[in-house]
Length: 521
Image 1 (cartoon, rainbow, N blue to C red):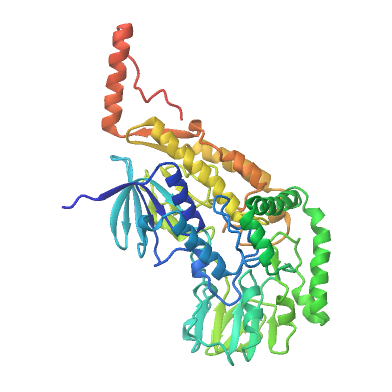
Image 2 (image 1 turned 135 degrees about the vertical axis):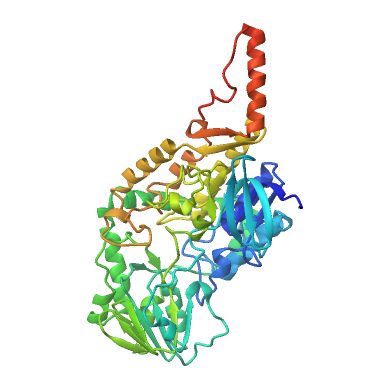
């Protein structure tokens, strides 16, 4: 029987988190690692989401790695194709392709307590790793609602994250289900070419103008010639958002002024009072993510668009029935219904030290020490883990903070030496989570009066970070060994124990305790 391949580190996913982890590992001198990617190219959510109008709602110079600045962003808010090209560029510049295994979907990861490693089964073969970095991301697996009769729909059905580019929407009657970030980009992109567009809206979003423009050639030349100017631009964008955090996390009532600006934005395009009433949210702005678009409201005002202020509840052939009883005919249904964020499918595939899956461990809600380490899952770290999401800034900032934590985790394993593992103590995980949830109580995400994808099935916010990115960076600057239990391979533990006893006997003529037993990390 062939010996199973073994690597120092296995990274799962090749989006921002996975590629960032790969770069950081190389910078730490770790070259014995692989990146397991289920698709045939890098990019993660920016590869999968290629729907019409797909773009980022975070400014380009802030939505990129600090260690890989891009002076040539074409627009202040980049489109999907530009972000995907950037990730391909990062892959090539940092020579990551030899480490990436495409078409290698992780099917199972099981902790091997005897060997202190992870046994990994993938669609392209099996291997083991000392350390696993899960960077699958929360926006990777689309969520499709269970609609009675949907299977019998004679037309085309697909999710926004799995756009069917072979299906021509021109002249079709199209139903858009959902009004999240994807939908408000899709609606104005397809409205001019479809015969009729019916938008099923359960909850209206708050929408602010998207002040997007082309970045001039002079600006790009300046950023190339003087990189400091791009750093200053990034710093300014970051600083503004850091100042805004207080309103979201501590003083939600101050967001009333922003609501008035959002209503004025709506009023400029929506003149019909009845339509305006349907589009006006009844919750505090910021409770759900504030969406940016200057085209969404004008598109809704067009004569070939119908807004149904109710969710889709049933499909009867080509007739779509809303929860309020209204009906619409459609040739195609596009679901913009989000992702499995608080119930990530990867959690069903990770089996920890006690034989339980991560999904079972998180049955009462996701929680991880500093958003990275789950108790009972040694040498396993997640990028963009529980309570690391943001409501108003760039996730790349949070990813880089977690990469700092990953780097120190690797350093600690190297210093400890031998076959060792660090397992987050349940007490440390619970203490961290209690502090996070206590701070969450007064945030707009918990008090704003809405039900958002930030909340899990139990109504707990396990998604967003209730503070500034600076606070999170300080919290993840280094690994505190007191928050972890040290595990050693049985053979090494015995050897170290005997060595310690021998040394102690020579020095004192007596017995010593196990060399590892005094470690409280």
